[in-house]
Amino acid sequence: MWFDEYEQLTHTEKEQFILTANQLLSKTFIIRDKYSPKEKRLKLNPDYRFIERHLELFRRYLRLSGWELEKDNNYGVIALYNRFELNRAHLNKRTTIILYILRLIYEEKREKLTLKREITTNVGEVVGKMINLGLIDKKPPNKDLIDAFRTLRRHQIIDYLGSDVTQPDTGIIIYPSILFVVTNEKITEIYELAQAPQKEDEDNEDELTEEELEEEE
Image (cartoon, rainbow, N blue to C red; front, side):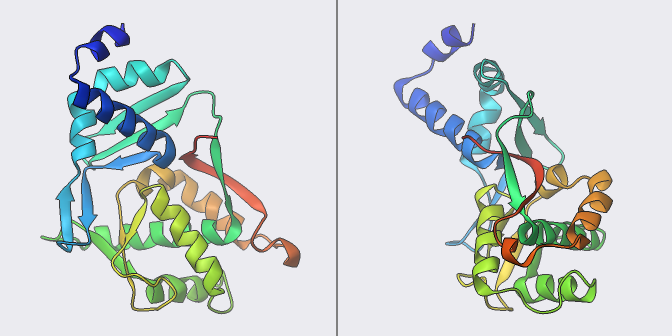
């Protein structure tokens, strides 16, 4: 039983277990190598290591409420999925397009990756690619950019290398968790969705897709 194993934890470990479980439910992904703004580099995420040490305990605990925990050692990603396909986050069209573009950029840069572990881009490159592919005609409103990037950051898909995501030179690190959100099979599907007509009064509110972003209601 998971509870017997839980009771063997120290008081500090029990507190950390509760906090980390809630992080999983709210963020969907826990990344092994996370960007540290203070040190300006990737660092080993202590939450990832804690889950790694108590992986089966987390699995048994979360399975009680319909969640499955998967760990990919190659990419350093721990992902949470609801086996009943409930509690999915709905992304509006703008966020879906940005997610699609980030996935394309990740794939392009991953092929050229050498000694650096992280894959980075910037806001200008993302917006430029959206325009070049004919997905938009001009730079989106600042509010749309802020909302979209904030959503993706909250789910541990990206992180900021600067503070203002409305500026073209603000850097963005793309985490490997994006591979679990937009698989190769989904790229075509999302591209077609992004090109679909959209009503003018639903630019910021229409929920157009349900990605593998599990979000606690």
